[in-house]
Image 1 (cartoon, rainbow, N blue to C red):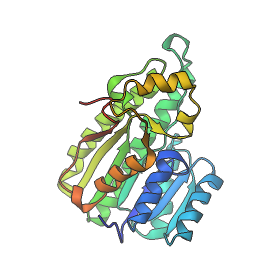
Image 2: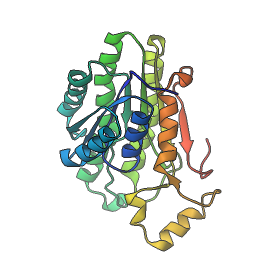
Image 3: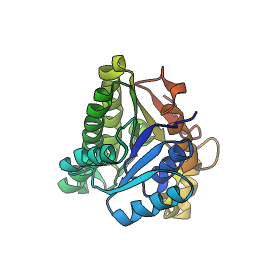
Length: 248
């Protein structure tokens, strides 16, 4: 599953699932450009990857800002000369019940989690099509995009929309050797889940047949496979990584 000679761009790559993905792709031999809203956070991950022999680029960017998508891709091309793999991982939450949800909380989540992924994919596709050597796009969704979740209407809508975007893009670029898939994690051990109250953790665990939260490394392994040549005939799919919590 070697990715030697490939160049990847991972949004939201400074912590959690995004960090694990950036590290796994680098381990497989890819040069990795990663972004976060704060350069210091991205740079720390990039420096550690380079200390282990990888090639990286850290960029400060907010994918919720329309201009940042093109800038991200341009920075990657300037550093590495090409782009083969895009992982749309950047995301935010602004939770609240619908009756109490502010317009700005709805707008911000959709801007980052859905529109940001669209704009990054559009910019990446321009580079991939120009290269004429195929490519891989992997969008990081969520189990709640399929099953819903109270108090997260904005986040659920964005992740459900990402599924539709994935399928539409896959059909548009399949003939050019570019695959587009989504990975939908369930409840994963991250900084976010670490902050849950114990009662909430137990309630979630009760819904998971395997009886445990997943790890970021387990999500990263699926992403790495979809980015590889072994997944060349897989496109337009949503791969659930959730311990049996949901099946479609």
